[in-house]
Image (cartoon, rainbow, N blue to C red; front, side, top):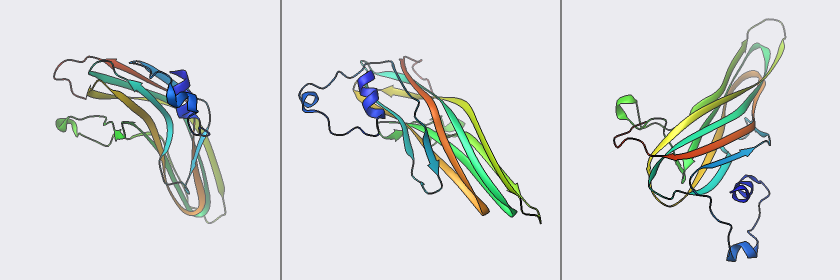
Length: 196
């Protein structure tokens, strides 16, 4: 598991060595934990989502999955007056086999949704006849949990994705960073008619 997780996290991971192509490392079964401490920086020039963590695992029996993610999230905003405005937030979600896992699938509760949650959010606005430059930097730790129902007995790929959404008017800039983070997935057997 550790080797698979390290390869999934390494931005420098290249072709699989030929020895592994013939005898790949075993796929971890059931419970998994994967973590990273590298800092992933996102700015307004990068509108595409980034993959924060990725792991391949096997469910041994059809099961439901509890997926927990915890991570540090930092925002950097720089606003200049007159009439400067900077909005920034980081949305995160998990994808199971390339499909976003919704927070709720129950139509009575607004589902199915896109599974995206806001991990950090800030809006800064300056209106002043004087020239003022305000730079804010914060870092916090947040967590969220998703659930996937009726996952079959097979090999799966689980990824945590993040995207920075920004709106800057006037002079200013916005960036975000995700630091230390942990992904834990645990197979469970919920009641027959369970819904998230």
